[in-house]
Structures are given as C-alpha cells and as structure tokens.
Length: 617
Image (cartoon, rainbow, N blue to C red; front, top):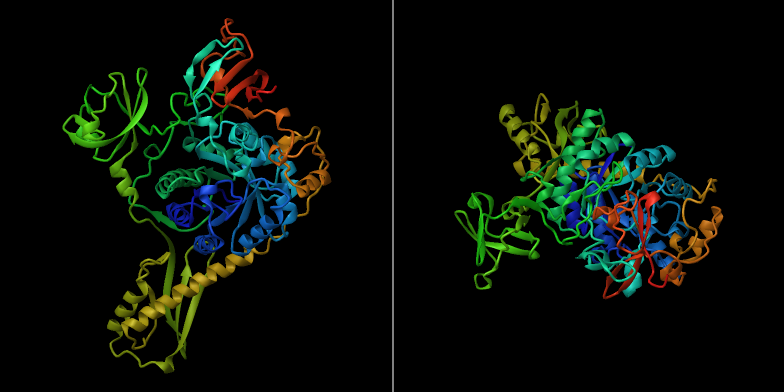
C-alpha cells in the first residue's frame, strides 16, 4: 500500500482542516460508542465529510471502538453498517463481537485498544477479519518490522500526540477508582493525578509527583526509519484537540513524510497540493514536552512528573522578576500580548499566566491586580504563541491540478476538464454548434472564454490557461461561460466520487479463520475484554476460550493488574532495579498512594514493565 498520514478530528470542520493541511486520511468519532464521549459526530456530518475527503482520494475512518454489552451490540452493528453506507472507508473497532455481528461489506480496522503488542496478536486479528491493525504506542522499530512481515494488512503506528501510560486496552485504573472505564470511552485520567510514592513501611521513596504522567510523543525525525520498517499508516493522536492543533501537526508531518517518500521514490496516498498561511511547528501546539517513547529501545526521559499540563516551547530564564512580571533580554521581540506562559521552578512548582503587556525587556503577566510573583529560579515556557495562532487561523487550501480544454468537431463544441494525476479522470460537455452564433472576433472570444473557464476559485481544482483548440468559437455571454465552468467542475467531482465508490464498495470482509500459535498471543481472561456473547463465540471459533468477561461486564477485575506499562517510575527516577540502583533502605513492595487508594506496584525487570495492582492483592 501507499503510506498514509492519518490525522485526528474532533468534528467534521476539524477533519476538513486536516485534509486541507495534507492528511491522507482522518479518523472521527461515531455518533455513539466512539471511545471519546466529547467527540461524537452525526451520520449526516460524516457522510458530508466522506464526500469532501474522497474528492482528494482521502479516507475517512470512523471510531466505534468501545467494548459493547450484549444489549448494545445490535444497535452498534446497525450503526457500523449505516456509517459504511454513508461513505466511511473503515470502522475502527475494539470489540470482536461487533465484527461478528456486522455485515461483511463493512471494513474494520483493529483499534489500538485491541492491545496489539506482538506480531502474533496482529496475525490473530488479521485472521479474525480486520483489514488493518493499530500497534501499541510502545512498539519499537524492530517489532514494527517483525509485525509488518508477519501480516499482509497495513500496520498503523502512532507518531505524535498524548501518550497513555498503560498499554491501551489494558488499563482498568479509572474504572477501579470511579467506575469510568477507558474501554468504554469514559476514562477519568487518573494517570494525570499526583501520587505519593512509598515503600511497604510507609517511607517516602520520592516527593509527591505526577508519577503516571508521560510526555507527548513526537516521532517526526523517525518517519524514514518507520517507513523502512514497514509502517503503512502514520497516526497522529488527538481526537479531542482543536482544529488549530490538527492543522499545525498535520502540516508538519506532511512536509517531512513527503521528504521521506520522495527520497524513496514513493508517491503520496492522496492528491492535491496543500497551501497554508503559516510555517508548521509542533512546539507551538499543545505538548507536555516530547519523547519518541521507546521507539529505538527502552529509554529514560519519557515522563512528565512535575506537571501534567502543557509546557510548550522553552523560552529561557528571566533576568529578574518583579511583582506582576519579569525581565528578559529582547522580550519585545519574543513575546506578544496574549501569549500563554508556563512557569516552572523547584521552589514554587508550576503555574500558567497570560502576557498582558510587553515594554522593552519587561513582560507583565496576569491581571494587574494579581501582581503575580515569578520565582527567581523559574524557567519560562510558552504554550500559546498569539502571533502563530493568528497565522494558523488563516484560510487553508488544497488544490488538484487539472486541465481545461475547448475543442470542436464538425458538429459540436467540446469542453472538457481532466485531472493531471495518476487517476487520469475527466469529464466533457458537448454543445451542438447549431445552437450558437459564431463569434465574429475570434481573438476576443478566445480571451473571454479562457478567462471564464480558468476561474476555479474555491473549487478543489486549479489549472493554467485553458487550451483552446478551435478554429471558431461560439458567441456566449460571460454568465453562460461561468455556468459552463461550474458544470464542468460538478461533472468532474461526480466522476471522482463515482470511481472512488466503485473501489470502496467492492470490498467484502474475509471470514474468520483459525490459525495456530506456539503460545496464546493474549491473556484469555478478563483482559481479553470480551463483554458480549458474540465476542466470546468468535474467540472460541478461533481456538481461544475466554475464562472471564471484561471487568466492565462483571468479569474478574480483582484478579488482573489495573495497569500494565512500559513506563517505569524507578527507571525515570534513576533507581532502576535491573541496574541495582534502588537504595536498599526501601522495603518492597512499593506503592502509589492518593485519596483514591494505595496501589501496589510490581516491577517485571526482565521485560522492562511495571504493573499497577489492585489494592486487594
């Protein structure tokens, strides 16, 4: 397949901005069961988006990726079929029961919530009928390559955005604490809360901090290596982010992916040249600082223990501080009114403030009456750049090259428009010569007709000067020539959509097939997240008996870890047990403690994993 850049969309307007910025595909939430309750979209909006996307050869994937109870499954299956019929290119799903209950004309992609952490798990999901698999964020390059070789379907990999501290689909902490399940789209994000870190005697191992909070992923510099490893879809996280975030990050990854594709003689998956009024810069959008997240092997520096909030780009340290502001050399060339700043210090923690005024080297923050005190050891980060945001709000465009021609036969004038890309699609209009008077001034008629036909304006197309290959021209008004141009554009759009639909609707999902494994590729207990009878039956048909339903469906929650993570608190603190760096004065087991409970930690050092356990264990 041709590699795709996949962007998130909270809603249809954000999806359109992503496509204009250069996305090859977008993913958007279904009306229900989409794992992000604040990012649901109507079937009508999705249908309209699909038509817009398909003009550019872009795909629309709809997330319907929560686990489903028996009572919900029939409605969810009907919804999946309706979304497919509305133009969706695939349904992103976690629940195998949904796959079993939905008509085979519908294509499914296996969500990262399916916990795809090995080549064998990808093989299992391919055999179940999925047409693509979204690998765990923790997957290193070596394993991306192994998985891509193990399956014949596209391998989708995350490249940017927020990180779940647990392997996706394997986190039950939010459900345990307050009954809000990430597998049901209701995660309360306890990973962004502050915890005490203690040993079994209650002795503090390290000061209170956000021990489960991670930085954000940024793999912009690794796209070439990921391409070479076999990644087929490059996924940006952020279905709750605003359109500005999506535009900026998509444009940045579009530029770099194009560079890497060009170096390998590969083509883009979709069509059209994106044009924006801003220079993309990921540091200008929301981030908790960046990391590649174990892409090249286990690494330190992936945590954000001091704050779960956005820091943005690092500016520096103030020269001095005063009540209500600070001094920094060249401040009037760095800051603008309305900039958002984040101050971080050892003495005062972290807090944010808005720039109210800049005068020379002096920057005034917050409201005058607040007289905010900036700690003398503060580091300054900018998490909102007002000038950049203004440029980002400008209108984007994406244009596909076309050629417009006017020709004649013995009896007709022939007007045509054709794409100048590998689709080679076109549309023509014939008008009988007998219906027109012949223009007396051929030169003037040619100039006016050419000018009218070339005015493609807000359409998805652009062209150079139309080719006029006629010995005579009809005498037509400017309004008639404009109407002719609009008819050509509509005709070409319908031709593009028609051809796209022929390809999209030719799909038929393969039947599940049982394949053998040396060892089961997943835990066959509550962690399989089977919440309905159809899921249990499909697992059984493929050779796996699930011993317990998902915790949310009444399964054995106390017998499984609340969280399994590649992240390790000890490694991040420089206390790696594997390297013998945990001080002997601390008595294990170690615990995280908050108002919600005291949670034991288990460290699987041989595999560099950390487990957050049930307090009952």
